[in-house]
Image (cartoon, rainbow, N blue to C red; front, side):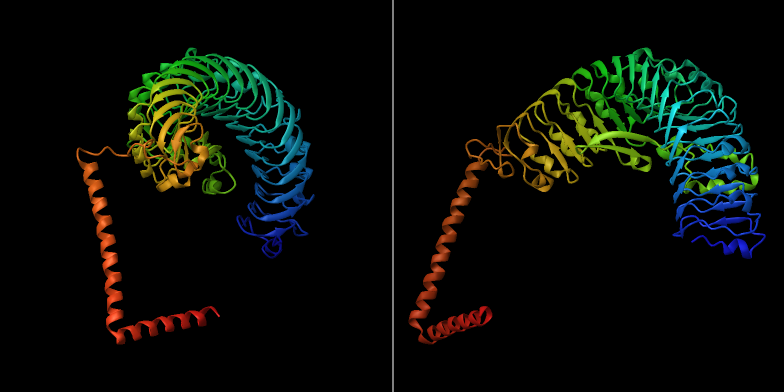
Amino acid sequence: MFPNWLLQNNSKLEVINLMKNSFQGTLQLPNSKHDLITLKIADNRFSGHLPKNVAMILPKLSYIDMSMNSFEGSIPSSMGDMNSLWFLDLSANNFSGELPRSLSKNCINLRFLKLSNNNFHGEIFPIYMNLTRLVHLYLNDNFFSGKIGDKLTNITHLELLDISNNNLSGGIPDWIGNISSLTSISMSKNLLKGSIPDQLCSLKNPKVLDLSENRFSGSLSCLLNISSLRFLYLQRNGLSGLLSNALLSESSRLSTLDLRENKLSGSIPPWINTLSKLRILLLAGNHLEGQIPNHLCQMQVYIMDLSRNRLYGSIPSCFANISFGMAAGESSFVTSLIRFNAIISLSSYYSSNLELNSDTSGSQRPYRQAEAEFTTKYRHNSYQGDILHYMFGLDLSCNELSGDIPAQVGELKNLRALNLSHNKFSGSIPVSFSSLKQIESLDLSSNNLSGQIPSQLTELHFLSIFNVSYNNLSGMTPDKGQFSTFDRSSYEGNPSLCGSLIEKSCNSSEVPPTTVPFDGEENDTMVDTVAFGWTFSASYAMVLLALAAVLCINPHWRYLWFNSVDWIIYLCFKMFS
């Protein structure tokens, strides 16, 4: 239960910080007015409705953080009477209803408003909205509907706008391009449609633009030529046109480019190689065609996904030059390239609240972490934040690539996931794959590979997924190390494979040796085996004859022998009776 005695017994108390505890029950306030300024009760187990008289009892509150609890009901309209309120975080609760008119109209000093992860509904920006000093606005993960409209045109200081994962419809209004202070825009997972307005390109310093999982159409326009962009998420829309027509030479800071599952066509453009900071390249599920260009070989990436396109030809042998992992001399990818501490701007308004920067480890996350969706181990996972330091993957599956798999691919020693399935590769599996010591998932299925599975692959101790099904492989399946854990589904569709793991016996005449012997080695081995067999049999017979002779000649030893046998039989009888 909320310790309201702290307020009753401490009339001059200005700050209460009970974050990250296990307090539960309802929020009970004292009966008399109090001059409390800061209330932080985030990440507890409080529940129930907020008191309707909260503004009357605590009229001087300027900082409220009640996030990550189980509060429910609507926001009390009296909160609109808190004229000093500049920070309000009610995220990750069970609040519902529409935004109170008084809150949207009267709290003109609000700089930070976070209502995400609740059950709010109705119009997202009411016509009476008058929060002209807002810097950060989080309304994501609710049930807001309708069009965005033009209600925010007077919020000229806005830096971060997150309205993702709602039911918003219509298009992006042109006025968003007039808010020059915007650095982060997230409108993903809505029902927005139409073309992406060119006005977005007039923003002076955007770092994050996430318009993914909507119904946008048309070309990429000028979005790919914004010099300040670090993250561009446009996946799962209906964008079309030639990717090569988009010029990204100015986006030198871009670290994440996600254009998956659109209708982009043409070849992979050479300007991608000019993006020296690019670490995540996701172009899967488009209509890209042509050969894989050599200029990709100079990239330093974490994840590269070119799957489900129409690429053809062979894998360039220079792919060994791709650096999967952190570049030499580069600090943390997630912290240095991803986090932009826009919250610092809030402290310029209230220098007495500089402790806000240290609070970002709690409920507020004013930076954008790198995020990448990637399929590995038969699962479609979303990797976010620090885990990207350890996830390095290459996916070229579901194309029309052909020829031998270059042995140089085995030099990509940091790879944890490699998917070359559903292509037209031929030749043998490179023995050099045994150098992929960090590999966890290796999928070579549905190709035209032939020959044996290299026994050296048993040295891959982290391998948990191995799939070579539907090829033309032959010989015995490896059964040592991690390979003892794979079932027949990893090998089906290869009629010439055999082994205990696929429940198919191998005839000696059909299974070639796993290593090639030098001249004379095979004959010497056969002679040694035969000699050992005869020697062992003769020695065994001599021991039996000697024992029988001793028992026949010496009655004392014969007595001891039979007495010992009787004693052993007696002990066995006592043990099992």
